[in-house]
Image 1 (cartoon, helix red, strand yellow):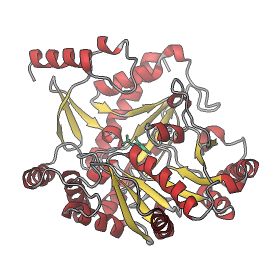
Image 2 (cartoon, rainbow, N blue to C red):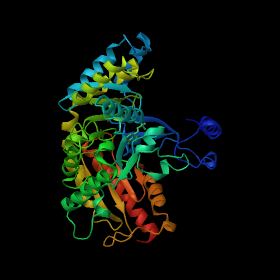
Image 3 (tube, rainbow, N blue to C red):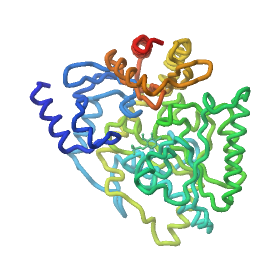
Image 4 (cartoon, helix red, strand yellow):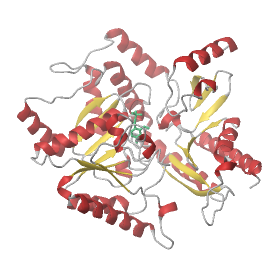
Length: 457
Ligand SMILES: Cc1ncc(COP(=O)(O)O)c(C=O)c1O
């Protein structure tokens, strides 16, 4: 891109674009990063710099960036129909085929698919389905929903409440009543001295049970969890966590909703994060890698248990009163269907399992790095935690701006990561090859070394 075009894009952007997660007053002075095109797992900016995109954009570009095969499917669908809805008596082939395909790859006992446009919408809709379920069961008092501190489930009004990060509530008068937050599972920092992972999981499950009892189990509708916390820090659940949590939920007949928006589609090494971690959800939500992030599409995957009650309620009320214009959009659905075909042809789960040992070895080696405390992963997602003192796990003085230095060094080494507090998360496109995994860790190590030398660590 020539300098004049780049300058004009930045000028328009500064004047008109509202960006998520920036200081709105200062943003117009910033020089936004213009990504012009993709090449596999690399993206190329307006100045021709190539970056290995180790965050897959926003944990989503499973097939990398730019795909001619998928583009042709989208082009054809745009030409043939462009749009049609699935309201009332209508359907379209991509929405029907995609739903059948999703039901086929979902765990057993999940046959029905509610298509939406984003992860936030899928979770927002799943909240309504949870309430619909309890109304159908004549327990309308079951309204409260428990999620975890530092979890992320979206930013609609309702999913901002599910999200367990106070900064998503501040300034909006949120959360609404009835959203509760139990402790996040974060063994590295919150496990007690001498406490095993199993014992820590037991303690968290006990805390959850105490919360349920204090609130009244008959008022709790559902427990919401990302199988593995994504934007909370790419943090693995401790051993035994879901088994113990599930036992508490079963005891009080509380629904479990698995937010698979990041973890779905082999991110954690199995098709679903729920399978990796032994969760038995009643609803699953997915988005992102559902279409390789190439079209905005998401889904709520509904268990037979919930579906039965949805039919009861729909009989009672005369119909299921919920739907978005773009739900089951033929272009988005056709793209997602093609992406799922590509997953099948490449054996996505098999591929992730094949590169996983190398990916995990990268984290293992980094554990000895002077800046690194925690360093763990699974499948193709993981993080290193940057600390000032490995023994005490103390963090650096914020005045040192270590993470800003790290980010600068990573970019200078052609590496894009996701920085969350003092953690650096990696979740590269699932198509990453073994050589590219080595290259990613080589760049990360150089960025860490240069950061250490700048701060004199
Ligand atoms: C676990 C999880 N759930 C939900 C969402 C929200 O998805 P979207 O941004 O598509 O609304 C995200 C987005 O990052 C996510 O990570």
